[in-house]
Image (tube, rainbow, N blue to C red; front, side, top):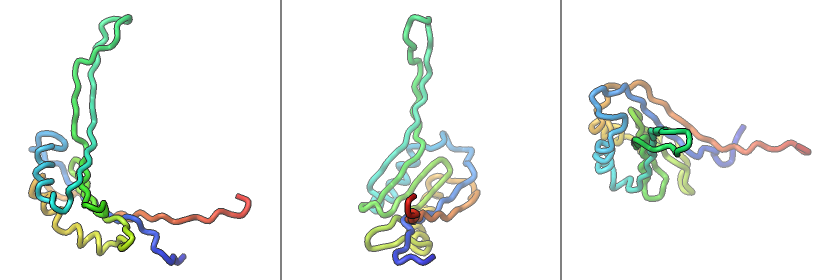
Length: 151
């Protein structure tokens, strides 16, 4: 099948690391901020995903539950460039670099490799992972599937 316009809309490289047993928590907010300072000029926009765990206490069947503890943890951070065509995603022991399609550029392996080059090294300097567990190259395509007549 040949396409007049390449259907690739996003290409990304993800690297999973073996856990660093010396870290304080799964995703340390201070280390995330240290990394962010290193890439802030190129990736100024930030989105964070947090998980909240509540502990409840039931005193009696007629009273409402009472919250006895609340724990909020940072789960993931996305750092975007100005025009949202590049994205760095940081999860617990995982780094990913995304290149998204723009009107001027279709993402490809060579583009994502060239754009990502300095960023994993900065990640390693800040998060101190033990070693790479595996790396994966991802492609996201959007392909229109023609509908059959009458279907």
